[in-house]
Structure formats: C-alpha cells, structure tokens
Image (tube, rainbow, N blue to C red; front, side, top):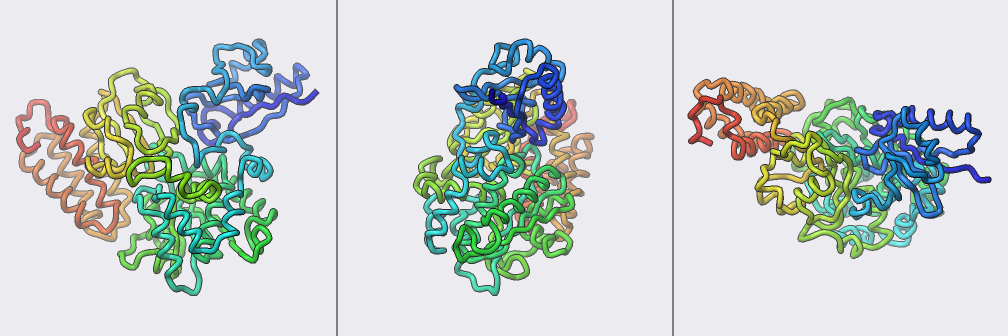
Length: 520
C-alpha cells in the first residue's frame, strides 16, 4: 500500500506560525498509529491566513486543512483527514478555495505545488521549457520576445524590461553581468521571498535566459540578510542546477556558459536601489551613484549590467515558454501581464494574490482580503511600501495599473498592500515616513539626509500645536524640495506618504482644538 502524501510548507511564514511543530506532531501520531505517510515540505500557496496549511493528496486533488495547530492533530486523525475526512479545519480542494481559485497565477504557477529543490518536480511542471526555447534563438530575438511581452520591472520603477535588455545588448564591454535585486525591504512585501523559497529554479532559469539575451556569462543574486531560508534554498538550488547542466559550462548541451553566485547584504534598505546595490556588490559602502551613466551602460565593475528584481526575472521563463504575445494578453494599457499583490497589515485574509493588471484596490482588499482583521472600517491603504501614498476610500476604485496610480500621485511599487483601520494614527504614520528615511538614507544628498531630519522636527511642531499654519506650509515646501532635489527614490518618494496624509487626513496632524485648517 502506497504511503499517503501530505504537503506541509516550510516557507518562512508557515514556519513562524508553527509548521515545523505541526509536521513533527503529524509524523509522531502517524507512527504511533502505524500509518505510512510521506511528508513533502513544499512552499506556501500564499494563503497566509490559513498557515500552517496541511494538504492531503487524493485522487481528486489536494484537500486543504488549516490553520492547523499541534492541538488539532489528534482530532484530525480521528476525523480521518488523511483520507480527506470532514473536520472544522477542512476547506475542500485547495484549488477551489476562492482566494486561490480567483487568481491568475503565471509567475507563481508552481509555488506551493512543487517540492522546491526537486529538479524532476520542476521539469514535470514545465520547468526549463523557457530555457530550452531560448537556446534556439539568437540574443536579439530573445530581447524582442521580452519587448513583445510588455514586461516592466516589478521592483517599483516599472521600466520596460526589454528596453533595458536592449541597452545592455547594444552596449560595449569586456564583460556583461546579470544582477538580481533580491533585497526585498518594503513593508508588507514577501513575493520575492516566496519565489526564492518555493520555486528557486524559476529565478535561476530566468537569469540564465537573461545572460543568453545580452551575452553575459556571470550573474549575481543580491539577497537581503533577513532571508536565511531563502539563502539556504538558493545555495542548494544553484549547486543542483550546476550538477544537472543548467548552470556553468555547456548549458543544456550548448556552447553557452553562465555562472551564478549568491551574495548576502547587510541590512541596508538603501541597497534596494540599484546603484547602491552595485556599490555593495563591489565591496564598497552602499551609497547611491549619480545617473547617468546608467547601470545598463556602466554598471557592475563599470561594465554593462542588467539589474532586475526577483519577480521580473522569475517571469521570463513563462514568457519564453509561451511567447511574448501570451503574456501581453494579460493586463491593461501599458501594464501588461500580472502583478503579485501582497496583502498585509490589518487584513482578515492576508497573503499573496497574483492578478492581471486592472482589478481595483477595493476588489483586492475586500474580495480577496475580506476586509480588516479587526472588523472595524478601513481608513487608509498604503500601496508600494513605506514610501507609497496612503490612499483614502475615494481612491480605492483606482485600477491596479502603473499609469492609473501615477495619475493619483501614488505608486504600485513592488505590490505591497498594507491596510489600516479607523483606529490608525495617521500623524504617527507621517512622522514614521520621515523617520524611516532618516534611518535608512545613505546620506549622500542633502535633501534626503537633512530633509528627513527636518521633516520629523516640523511634524512634531505641528502635532504639538506650535505655529501650525506656518509649519504646515514649511512641511509642504520641504516635501516639494525632497521630491525634486533628492538623488534617488529614497528621498524623492519619502514625501509621498506625508503629502497624501496632508491632503486626505490633514486634520489628524493638528491638535484637536486647532483651527489651522486653511493650509490643508
């Protein structure tokens, strides 16, 4: 009789919620009851509100139970969950759970389904098909396919990936490099981590294809130090991919070579900015470089360099496997394909939602997320990380696409969505934006270095009722100066959350008895 197969994630979030203990408890009880089971430690499906999620393989598909605690194990066995028995924690077939069923998973097609380090599992689920096709094309053809797809950088700037690749292909250099920005530091974001922990080969495959496209034979993954499990998975995956001939010399039996190294950052948020990242990779202090020259022309070690984030590179394999037009058919306007949105903060059903561009923020938060965890009315939603604007209710109907968000002075960024209910202190959030910049600034330019410090002081004066009229105007002027005068997006975007709070929640900046409202 074949062993019963169970899937229990070893994703960082699942483990933090007790997945390891649940796994051990299930194994212990199964042994006591003389039940033969096979436990696969997969990646999370992204239904974080159900973690730890335990899935049982059946002839109809996987059946989900969650969130499971150690105290639930005895009752699960009593309900014969290993044969899909009924239980209060049962959710039926995993694929039929509305949170998952209503998504359009392209980049995340394998996440939570395959065993992360199994090459055979990866290949059985269309892995390396993109690379196989890439090996039949010349460099310019590969770049043209990426252009056709309409893929834009998923790291925040949303620059067309194909244009960046074309620049690197056309640039002259003794060597060219592919750099993956895996320094995912925005609040409420975890899509990069999920890919690296649950489907590391898709990132490797995407980087190899990028190397073929521009003539680069060396790649680097710059990973934030706070992701030890991702580092463990990537290190093992790189070794296994080399042994199988998908990295190193003669890739896939061709004459092409590509070597990949993992480098760990040291906890600096500013190193998420591409030029500061390159400085850090070169062994220098992570400080922003002036542009021009662009990294695509003079990047790592002064050579032409592609710098893309994890999701951008992890999306390349499906584009090559199914064609640029296939990917282009998803989305709207100039925002093509899908974006993994990450629901966090005061949210009932937190997790990852991959959808084609075009759904509204309200649909995302209230249909997928089911509103606030506290059950109190939502007041503001911050999109795009700690430098993103706080959006009031009247903006929640805005379509999730780059141009629509730009039109309301907001950013999609890396897709992080953080929800705040009516109890949130928006004055404290405005102060936090400036404080975050003060702590994380590289210090190279005055508007960012000094502006953030002055911003904290001015906000404190406003909230304390010190000459509020004059200081509100001073804060507005300071924000304008930081936006136009900062060297990079760190200082240039720090005012966005502050300005949105001044515009839509301005009364919360003032003492309750203040009459200084005309400036707002």
